[in-house]
Image 1 (tube, helix red, strand yellow):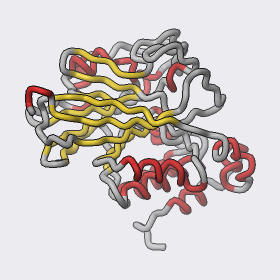
Image 2: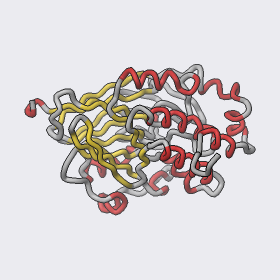
Image 3: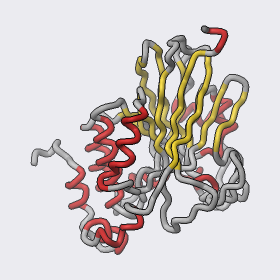
Image 4: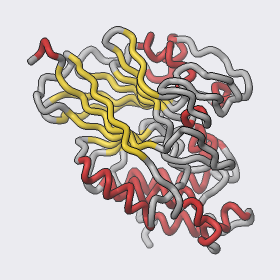
Length: 305
C-alpha cells in the first residue's frame, strides 16, 4: 500500500493493542454487539428562516454529533440509508465521532464519513474526544491516520478554520471551533471571552450565512456574541436524563441542569441548535432522551419571498 493510501483497515491494524475496549472491536466483535444491534435513533427536524438566502427551495443540512463509534447495522447501513433518503445538500459534524481511548471507534467513524463524502460535501469540527486523541502521545498516531484518511476522502476538517461553499446558489461559510483542553475541565472550566474566540478562529465574514460548528455548548452566549448566524453543537448527550425540550439533568463536566443543553435557542435572528447525539460511551444510559439525527432546513424569510 502506498504511503498516501491510508484506509480504515490500516487504522484498525494500528489498533492491535492491549486494552479490552480496543480488542473488543478488533478481535471480538461480539463484545461490541450492544453498539451494533440494539441502537435506535430518531430524526429531529428544524426549520430556520433567514434573509441570508433567497433560494425558494432552501438548503438542507444533516448534523452528526457524538456518534462515539456506534454502528447502526453493519457499516452503519441504517444511518447511511436514512441520510440518503433525506437528500441533504451538505453534511456537518459537531464532533465526538469516536471514543478517545478506543481506536476501533475511529474505524467506524472513518468508514461512515468516507462513504458519505462520496455523495455529499462533509464538514467536520472535532469534539473533545478527537482533540484529546490528537494530543495524546499514545493515541496521536491513530488519530493522525484517521485524519489523513478523511482528508483523502475529501472530508473538510475544520480545526479552528473555515471554508466556504455555494449551495443552491447561496454562499455558506462553515467555521470549526476547537477549544483548548482547559475548556473541558471538570467540574470547572474557564469562561470563554469573545476576544479569545476571535484569536482562535478570527471574525465572521460579512457575506453569506455564517455557520459555526462548536462541540461544547457551554459557551453558547459567547458564540452568539461572536456573530454566527447558526451555531451547531453536541457534547451534552441531551443531559443523559432529558427533562424537557431544552433541559437535561447533567453534562459531561458534571454541571447540573446545564444551559444550552439540547434543542433550539434563539437570539434575534441568530439560532443555536444542540444535538442530543447519536451515541454515548462508558455508560450507555439515556432516559427520555432518544438518540437523534438532526435535519436542518434553511429557508428564506417570509419577507424575502
